[in-house]
Length: 349
Image (tube, rainbow, N blue to C red):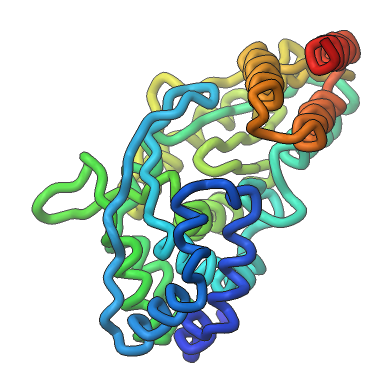
């Protein structure tokens, strides 16, 4: 495994920090905290650089709140200066780790995503079922309180396998240690905040240990993962039942994670499976009801923002096209037409 020894200077360079700012600010240029930071941009970036260079940087506190998208999530948001640093770290670390991730790890990766994950499942089900003529089963699991349960010491240990730069590891410890969930105790600090960009990468790095266990030790052929949600496809139901024990043992002993007991299920492929926002059925797929509701609510919110002069008509149309793009991956012609008609009727009234 290739290791890296001189990352810190690249991460904290003013060039990387300014590039990270440009990436970070996209879509946020009207946010009050972003505007305040930008008002003295050079001063703020050089202050961040100096603190990092002199090893006196300390991560700030978080502002926490709930969102519903579609389920209720507890989001912890860092201050702008820290979020710019998260982007700087992400820019340099992502390319180093992405090439060791398995091809069927679909979350938060360039060229992957939910649609690729659903396409993979459809393809594998067709293959295993011999175009839906043979029995085919899908084991679906996810991990209980995943982001809250990520163990800091294990995460640092996993990161240290590739990163041999002590300064970078100290910086990562500062970022990771800036947050702890209610799952922490006197002896173990746990949790990464859903609101951090770095948390998406840390999650994939953490679960990459599990991915390689599945592929290299258990030799599971038809396995895919999206964050903490994973599936295995097989023509043998007993195989899927038997594999649960070694999976559970590895997660608990090596990563201090547990499977969600209410979210372990084995489905017959011909009955369909709810996966990544779609109901995947033989020969077609439908939009999940919660996904459809979220799209309708989202477009109504954008229409309201347009009518309140908070966004432009162009921005509202971009949102419509984004939703229509999601619908194009399912058999959802009627929903698409309803959405377009509702949008233009309300925009032009």
